[in-house]
Image 1: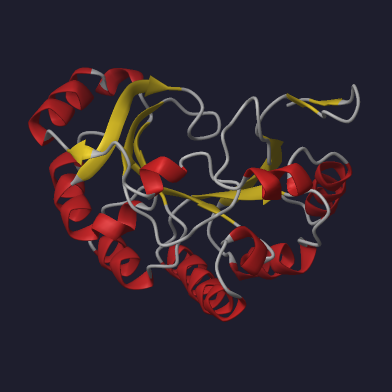
Image 2: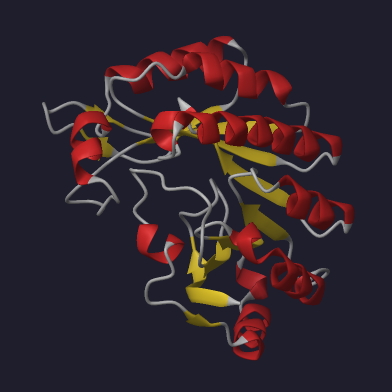
Length: 247
C-alpha cells in the first residue's frame, strides 16, 4: 500500500471523535479545492510499513474511537485495504473516508462487515467540484448516489460532509443526496478555504469559490429545516470582511 503517513491521535478527522488516521495515496477525482492533492497524485508517498502501523495502532487503541482511513481515495487500493481491515477488525472500530464512486470495491468491504463508519462528501455541482469533464462527472455522480444506497443498505453510520463553495448553486444535488439516505447520519458543513490556511490544487478556482459566507448560512438553515443534525466543521474568517462563523 502507498501512504503518506499516519497520525496516532487526531481530533479533527471525524466530527466529535478521536481517531488514529492513516492517509492512503491515489484518487480518481481532481477536485480543484483539494489540499491533499499531492497525496492524491502520489507525490512523496512510500510503501506502508504494516507491522509498524499495527503496533502503533494497538498501543494507542485505548485513546481512539476509530481507525480512520482517508486519502486521496482509499478504495483505489481496496484489495490491500481489505486485508488491513481484516487485521484490525475486532480491535478498533473502523472508519472509511471515501468519495463512494468506486462502488464495486465499496460493496466488497461492506459485505465483509469490515466498516463501522463512513465519511463522504457531497461534491456539487459535480462537474465543478470533481474537477473533471461534464460527462465523466455526471457518471461519477450516479455512482456516488449508488454508493449512498449501499451505505444505507448495510446500515453503516454516515458522516455526510458538504464542501460549501461560494457563488455556486449546490442545493439540488444536496437535496437529492440527502433524500437517498436511510441509515443514521449527520451533516458537517465544510466551508471551502484557501490560502493561507490551505494550498488548494487550483488557486484560481479557489479565489472564485472559497471563503463562502452567505452560502453556509443558507445551507445550514435549509438542512435544519429538514430536521437534520448539522454541524459547522471549523471556525473561519471571511477574507472579505470581519464576519466569523463558529461551531
